[in-house]
Length: 219
Image (cartoon, rainbow, N blue to C red; front, top):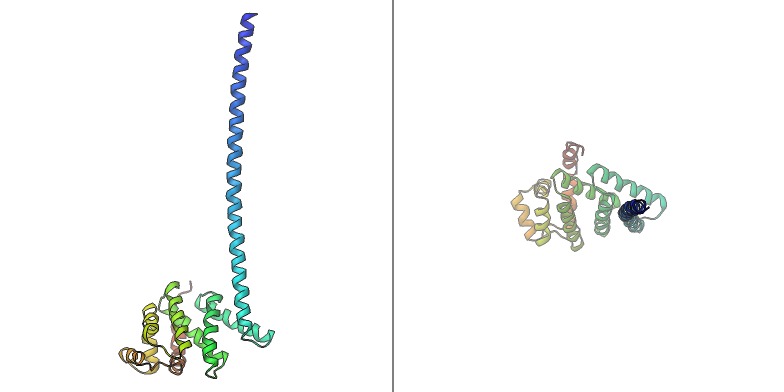
C-alpha cells in the first residue's frame, strides 16, 4: 500500500508539473497573441490616420481651388488641368495645386488668365523634373518662386535660393530672355526680373522645356 501511495504521489506530482507547463505555455501564447493584436491594431490605426490626413489635404486643396472658380464645370476643368500637369511631371496634385494657386493670384493681378497660370505652373514643374531636382529642392524652388511673384520681382535671396535648388532654371530663363547667365544674375541683383519678365521668360521657354520633358524616362 505504501509503495502504491508513493507511486500515486509521484504521478500526481508529474501531472501537476506538466499542467503548470501547459498553463505557462498557454499564458505565453496568450501574451504573444495580445502583442500581435496590438501590432495589427497599430498598423491599421496608422493607416486610418494616414488616410484621414490625406482626405483632409484633398478637401483643403479642393476648397482652395474652388475659390478660383465660378461654377462646378469650371472647377472640374481646372482640376483636370492640374491633374494632367501632375501626371506629366510625376508630381502630386496637391503640390501642383498649391503652385497654381500662388501663381494664379499674382498673374490675375496682372490681368492674365488661369490658362497663363496653368502654363507657367506646368513649365516650372517640368523644368524642375528635367533638371533632376529632388522633391525637397523642387519644393524649395517653388516656394521661392511663389514668394518672388507675391513681391512683384525675383531678386536677392529668392533668386539665389531658387537657382540653388534648381540650377537648370538659370540657363532656361537666360536663354528664354536672350541673355547670358551672368547677365541674368545682374538683372536679378538690379531688380529687373519683374513679374512681367518672368511671364515672358516662362512663356518663351515653354516649348523647349516641353520637348526636354518628353525625352525624360518614364518613372
